[in-house]
Image 1: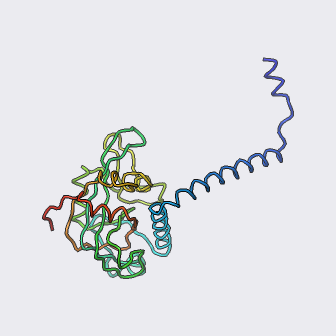
Image 2: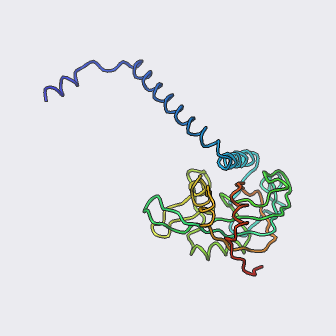
Image 3: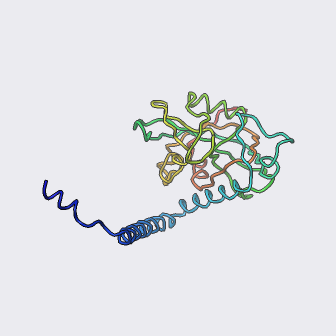
Length: 243
């Protein structure tokens, strides 16, 4: 007890010393973070994903995003989202299904995403290039009725509108069917997550159902990565005769 009181009575650390210690700790932490980031970016797939995320943020900064129900598209009276953004028409789309460990309850649960396939017709500014074959939809605000219904049926309702504090917006996201936790797109599309496999084994775990288009998307948020093209080439898709 006396020893504790003696320590308590010792002169406090000067504020200047405290700031120096904290500054050094922050710099060390940033150096470590930069070193890890540098190693990750040496992987072409990670670099491509990061560039896709950056492009998405840039285009979103110049376009107004609105939340609409499934199937509802902007009319000619709508403002910046439809006119100053872009319209992407895809030849086909896939409802993807993968498995993910819920961060809250730890259960391994199915999660879903939408992949669009070209050839694409693009009006306005878009990160899509003429030779792009596929793109993953993220932070989905609105989808055509057929696709929205397909994901709802496949997920049993666990893919639904909800607000994300990470993204700062409301979009269609996955939820854990066991505990109801939100499973946001950012967490599902990180390297080695459900929708960013880094090897063929991970790619083959993803299943999908093809839907023939054309499908029209207004100002979609797109993630471009080489794994989606590979996924199409490795017979991991069931192709029902659907329209």
